[in-house]
Length: 444
Image: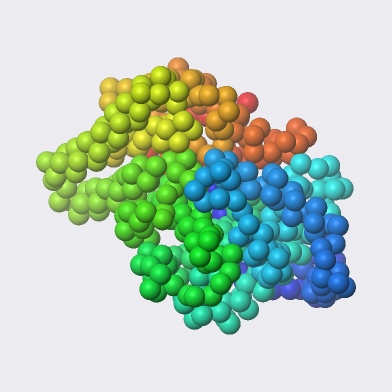
């Protein structure tokens, strides 16, 4: 998942009625200009009686049916997190989240429609995005202090931030999404698993977010999503995790597998690898890198990975080679972590036996993928593995990335070509940051 407007480019409505919606949304400085007349129209209720108008209802259904699956391809309503009733409840409040979702849904539709329809959907997306940002700023001004003591308000903040991040990711902004993520991180530094999940600390307000019969499912979902984003952000930013991820991921209520089909122990290792990589880089720059300490730290992470992979193999053998989605996704991520570990310890050497062993095993896992298991949630792993694959295996990863592109959008060839170009650039840049090795992915 992943981009957002820069902090110094806060969206402001414009009085220029001739602003082109497509141009405004694609502006390099990240600012979104919107005619004041459009804002006045948007400020009116969707209908006189409070019922959704047909257009808004259609966009909401498009979000639930298609966009949500793009955001969370491995989520199942049969999981411990249950259905998405909490999200529908928050949307029906018609706050900033409501307009953020309509914006994201419009953006998604604009990518799969013709030129005229694309313009109209981009215009709608811009209108709702501007409204969402204005109401979100108002919400933060009024509710920031309250949401630390009210889980329902906290959930609304997290949900809106998540959608705004997805908006920036979808339109291809490189690092703009980081502004929203950092705002979430700032708030999450003021809370803890105890204050959220311990009944002695939580609000007694009865709502779908925190009612006795459905305890915290919305917050569990949203917190898991934000912790994951913080960890995956290390890939494209080169920074270490900003949240105390180990503390959160050792909390029983936070199970990333329910959301991303990747078990917590692998997510912890992803964070540990980012910290390990930074430790090595800092000590190298200062000329005090101890090879023995480097090897010791690397061996400790390798032992955890090896043990975890062996347990996954044992579980699959007990099930007579039937691999669950969580088991398969966790294995692919674990193998990618193993490749990244060897890259940190030894350098970006695709021919290194340890690296090729892990890449080869991942290729077998990917080739044996059950058809029902999507590739869409494997971007991080495919990026790392593809970077360290030798030339004769590059075609496989190119084909896998092409498959992810096709799954992400289903539209005409021109629109798909646009998304492919953005995808190639993002993959190349992120791989270079993570492994210091640029992949040779073709544009064919």
